[in-house]
Amino acid sequence: MNAIEYYKLKFGSDRNKAFIHLTKEVGELAGSIEKEKHDMAQYELVEILGLCYFLASTYEMHNVNEKLESVYTEKLQKLKG
Image 1 (tube, rainbow, N blue to C red):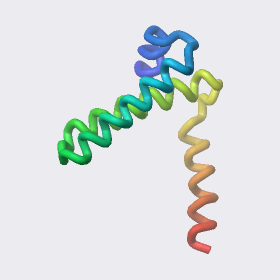
Image 2 (image 1 turned 90 degrees about the vertical axis):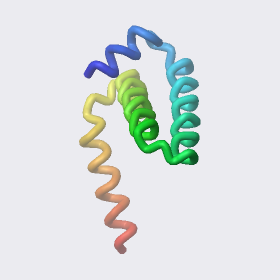
Image 3 (image 1 turned 135 degrees about the vertical axis):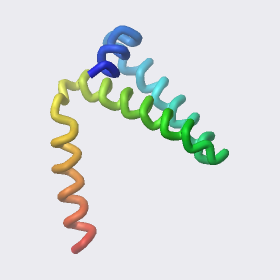
Image 4 (image 1 turned 180 degrees about the vertical axis):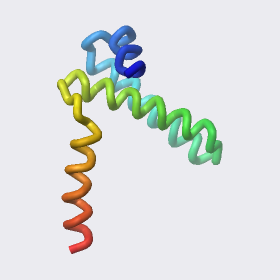
């Protein structure tokens, strides 16, 4: 995935820098939502997802989508009762 490769080049193995960048992107997303700038909000979401995939890769989580499905299937079942 290009996002993972990009952030590996940018941050190496420094999770702290990646996390700080992630929080910055979340702040930019909040501003985009507040100003109702939908295109910018979508762009920020892509940046956030890329960073999340990168961070997951630093923990050797290569099956993120499967884990998402598993966790939220269970949560959904609990919510539905």
